[in-house]
Length: 327
Ligand SMILES: [Fe+2]
Image 1: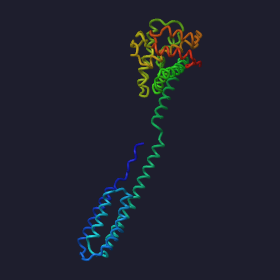
Image 2: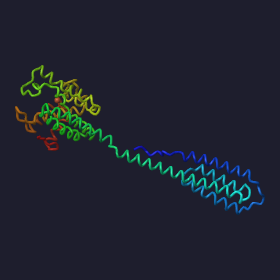
Image 3: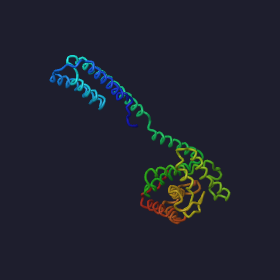
Image 4: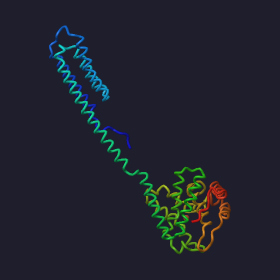
C-alpha cells in the first residue's frame, strides 16, 4: 500500500485565500473607522488577546502556520492602531465566526478524506496478494504440465518429483539460498517435460537406443525448454532445464557446456537425475541400493558431475542428510 496522500488538499489554499480576504477586510475597516485619540490600551489589550487566541488555536489544529498567523497579526495590529474598541468588536467577532465556520468545514472535509482513504485501504487489503496469486498460478501450470507427462509416462512423473526433492536438498546443503533452491526444485520437477513430445517406442524402450533414437531422445531438453520459455512464469528456469544433460567435462548436450559454465541448477539436476534413475525400480529391472548408486556417481566425479556437488551429494546420502525416496 502506498503512503497515504491526502485527497483533500484545498484547506491550505483555502485558508490562505480567506486570510488574505479577511486581512483586507481588517485593513479596510481600520482605514474607514475614524481614529479616536486617547485609546484605552487596557481594553485594546484585552480585546486583542481575546480575539487572537482562537485564531492561534485554529492555526495549531490545522497546522497551517502562515495563513492563520498572518490573520492573527493583522487582528492585533488593527486592534492597536485603529479607532474605538466598541466599533471594532463587531468586525472582529465576524472574522472569528467566519474562521470558526472555515475550521468546521475543513475538519469535515478532512474527515471525509480520511474516510475515503480508509475505504480504499480496506478495498486494497481485500484484494489477493499479487505475489501469492502468481505463485498459485505458477504451481497450477506446473501441476498441469506434470499431469500431461503423467498421462504419457507415469514413471517420468514420479521420477521428476523425486529428482526435484533431492535437488532442493542438495541446493540448500551446498549453501544456495531458499529462493535459488526453490527455482532448482521447480526445474527438477519439469526437467523432463520435453518427453511429452517423445515417441512412446523410444520413451518406453528397455533395450539400448539406436543412434537415431538417441539423437531423437536428446531432443527432449530443447522441447522442454521451448515449452517453458513460452510461459513468463517459467522463463527463469529455462536455462536450468535446457542444460540438465550437460557434462562437467564438456561432453554432454545440447551445447557441450563445460564446468561452471553449466548453470549450477543443471549440475545439481544431473547428479540427482542419475541417482534416482539408478535407485528406482523399472518394469525391466530392479533399482540399485543407495550405496551402489553413490559409488557409481563417484566413478564419474569430475567427468560427468561437478566434483564438489557430487561429493556433497554422496556424503549426504551416506550420512542420511538426504534420504532415499521410494514412491
Ligand atoms: Fe532428461
